[in-house]
Image (cartoon, rainbow, N blue to C red; front, side):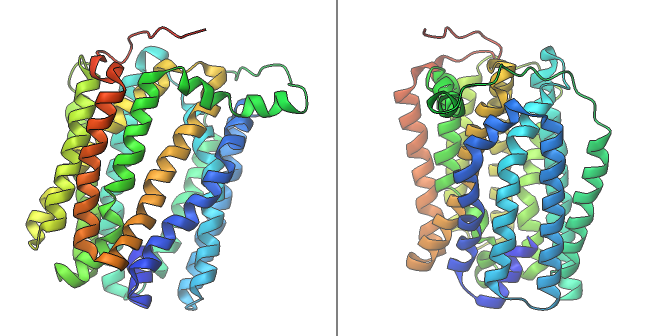
Amino acid sequence: MALGWDLYDRTNSALVLGGVGLVLIIPVILLSLPAGHIADRFNRKGIMLISQCVLVLSSLGLTVLSFFHGSIALIYGCLFVIGTASAFLSPASSALSAQTIPEEAFESSATWSSSAWQLASVMGPGLGGMLVALFHSATLVYALNALAALIFVILLIFIRARHQVVKQPVKKGENSWKTVFEGVHFLRRTPVLLAAITLDLFAVLLGGATTLLPIFARDILHVGPTGLGWLRAAPSIGALCVVLILTHRPPFKHAGPTLLIAVAGFGIATIVFGLSHSFWLSLAMLFLLGGLDDVSVVIRSSLLLTRTPNEMRGRVSAVNSLFIGASNELGGFESGLTAQLFGPFLSVVGGGIGTVLVVICVALFWPEMRRLGTLRETEKQPG
């Protein structure tokens, strides 16, 4: 939240906002598959500790640059380092969770993990907006982020996980590269997983309205940084409400159709948000799309946990991280670029329409998704 407001306030450029996503996604695209291979070969907790320490230093760098009004290029440099650390952190974190949670609790754990994430996402933007409005600077927000990351490093030290299964060392050359891409091959052989990840990729890639929230807050809805904080928090508030409902209901019995309906609803809510000139209607649409997106997150996360062998979790999680990173960050760049060329209204509304079309295509191309019942159903794997 602070980064978006800071950059747009300094430059008045939607393209600069979109550039944040581009800088963050480049190292993820380059390093995610090797990072997944490393997560399956080496200690996942150690990888997380190193990556998180890098994130602490990067946040401190943003703090210094904000205080001394450093150049946009140096800010992008810090973001590139953050993207590099995230490329290693995400697959190791996802794979490590399976070593700490009983298999029968995977779906429940995905729901509770999402609720914790969404609670932080509600508190963060709201607090960030108030701090920026109070101090007229994003410096303190960056400093608090560095402190929070440091606390996580300390807590991570105390986590104990079950023994990680590591295959015998592979030979140099082609076999080594083959193991790096085994996560991709596994997804190709698992249509339901591939459909779920593809759906998330293109839906968020096209429907990324949140990148343009600083523009809507300042120039369209006229609510300032405090209003931006509420707009940032609204999707997470919606997601938190949905996740609290999911924790008290039985497991999904029609997971595939539920996922398709949720993502289609996400696209429709995005369209209405793009057309809105009312702060309260915009807030309601962000609340709705956040709740619908959380349904998608829980289903996709549960599928990855239940249908991926432990020795493949790092590489499969790396592919998933690559797809998520591409959808979030490239989606942000796409939104910023189209907003710069055609205006924010057309950027958001067009993205919402594209999301609905993606749902239709996935439903037609992967009938397995339409037939998916419970998340723990076994799926026959071709030889």
